[in-house]
Amino acid sequence: MNQTALPHWDMTPIFPGLDTAEFEAGFQAVVTALDALTAAFDANAIMLRETPLPINAESVALFETILQQVNALGDQLHLLDAYITAFTTTDSRNALAQASASRLEQQMLRFSVLNTRLTAWVGGMDIEALLAASPVAQAHAYALEKIAIQARHLMSPEEEALAAQLRLTGSNAWYKLYENFSSQIMVEVKVKGATKTLPMTAVRNLAYDADRGTRQAAYEAELAGWKRNAVPIAAAMNSLKGEMLTLTEKRGWESPLEVALYNNNIDPTTLEAMMATAREAFPELRRYLYAKARALGVPTLTWYDLFAPLYADSRPWDFGEARDFVLAQFGAFSAKMAGLARRAFEEAWIDAEPRAGKRGGAFCMWVRGDESRVLSNFQPAYAGMATLAHEMGHAYHNLQRSPCTFTQRRTPMTLAETASTFCETVVREAALAHADRREQIAILEASLQHSTQVIVDITSRFLFEQALFAQRKERELSAEELCTLMSDAQKQTYGDGLDPEALHPYMWAVKPHYYSATFYNFPYMFGHLFSLGLYARYQQDPDAFREAYDALLTATGMADAATLAGRFGIDIRTPEFWRGSLDLVCEDINRFETLIAEGE
Image (tube, rainbow, N blue to C red; front, top):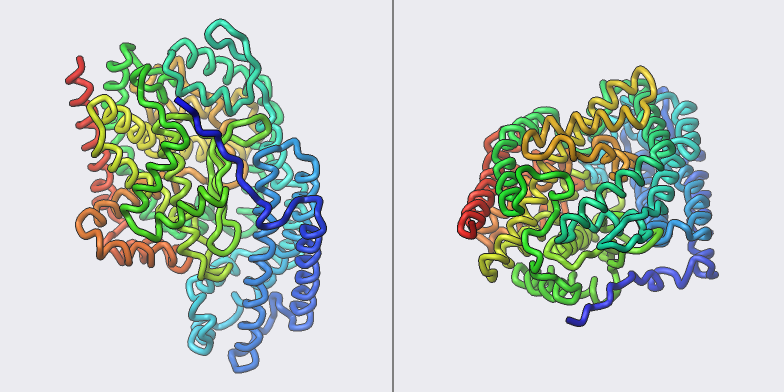
C-alpha cells in the first residue's frame, strides 16, 4: 500500500517567515497599538477608581471605544502568538522561534496588565445600567457579568501589575521549560531485536503496536525516560502549583478548583453531578477492560495493553484514507462542515508527522477569522483518524465563532470540547455502519478506549491534582511522591481493571495540561458526555438540530454552560442527563462484549 506522506502545516499565508520584514512589521504594529492603548488607558483613568464613573452618554461612549480597541488588539496579539506557536510546537529547538516567543511575552504582559485595569474599571461600574445604555455592552453581557465577579477577586493594582511581571519568570517560564524540555527527550528502546533511539512522542506511539513485546519494551523505556528526566519536570510542577495556590489565596478565592469552575463557566453542583455519575459508571467501564483482556488472551490488562489493537491485522488507516473518510462524513452532516474540512486539507492547515522536537498529543488552534491549524502525531490506525476528526471539530467550532469579537470568543474548556467530540462521534457512527465484525470491534474498541480515558483516567488525573494541591500547601513534593499520588489515583479509578503493578506513575510528567492550566481535566469529561447527549438530540431530528447546533457553537463564550444546555432542554445540574450520556457508552460496551464473545 502506498502511504500518503504526512503533511506539515503552512504558515506562509500569515507571514513568509519569522526572519522576514513582514513578520517584523506585524510585530511592530502590535507594539504601536499597545502604546496607543496604554496612552488611552492613562488619559481616561481606566483603572480601579475610588468613585466609579456614572453611566451617561460620555462614559458609555468611552466604554464602547475602549472595548473595541481591546478586541482589535486582542486579535492582533493572538495572530502573532498562533504564528510563533506553530514553530515552537513543531520544533522546540528552533532558536529564532523561541526568541520570538520571548519577545511576544513582553507584549502579552503589557496587554494582560491593561486587561486587569479594564476589569477593575468596568467591575466598579453599575453593570445593569451600562447594559441598559449600551448595545455594545449588551452584546458582551456575559463577559461583563464575569468581569464583575473577577473584579471582586483582584489584588491591588500594584500587586496585580507585579504578579503579571513575575509570571514571565514564574509560571510562563516553568511551562516553557516543561514544553521544550519534554519535547526534546530521546529514549532508547529495543524493538524487535534492534535498539533505537527515538523521540518520546514516537516511543509513546508504540503503545498502539500489535506486538505485546514491543508495547512492553516501549512502556518500560518510556517510564525509564521520564524517571531520568523527572527532576526538572517535578520542579516545574511544584513551582506552577505553588504560584497558583499563592495567587488563589491573595485574590480571595476559596481554592484553585473554585477558580477552575469560574473559568469553565460551570458551578459546583454541575461538577458534582457529573463526577458522581462517572464514578457510578466505573464498574461498567471495567467490563470493557475485562473483555479486552479476554480478547488479548491476558488475565488482566496492563497499562501497555490499554491502546493495543485487538488484531495484528487490524485495518490500517493511511492518512489519505483518513482524510477522505473525514471529508465524506463531515459532508453527510452539512455542506458547511465539509467545506471547512476541505479547506483544512487543501490549504495545509494540518501538521501530522511525529518528529524530534515536536510536542506530543494533538491540538487545534484558532489563527484568525475562520482559519485554524491542527497538530497531531498521526498513527495509521482508526484512532489516528478519529483524533483527526476530533481536532477538525475544533476547527469547525472556530469557524462558527469567527463573527465574534475577541472578548465574545473566549470559550471555556468545558464547551471547547463540544464540537470536537461531536465530530468524532459522527465519524465513529459512520465507520461502524459500514464495518464487518472485526472492524466493528476495532472501532468500538477505539471509542471505548477514548471513553475510558475521559471518564476513568480523567477522574484519576482530577484526584491526583486535588491531592497535589492539598499537599503542596505544606511543601514541595519529590518526583517519587508525585508518582505515588498518581499511582494511588489510578488504583482508585481503574480498580481491578488494570494490573496494579503495571500502571503509569509518570502520567503527571506526560500531560502538558498540568503545566498550562489548573484542573484542566474535568472539562474533557464534560465535553465528551455533553456531546454524546447532543448527538442523541441530533439523531432524533437532524434538520432541526443543525441550525441550533451552529448557534450553540457561536455562543459558547457568551453564556454559562447551564444556560446553553437549557436551549436543548438539558439540565446539566442533575445526574439524569449525565446518566443518559453514560448509557450510550454502556450500550457500546454491551455490543463490544457480544462481538468479542462471538469470536471466543
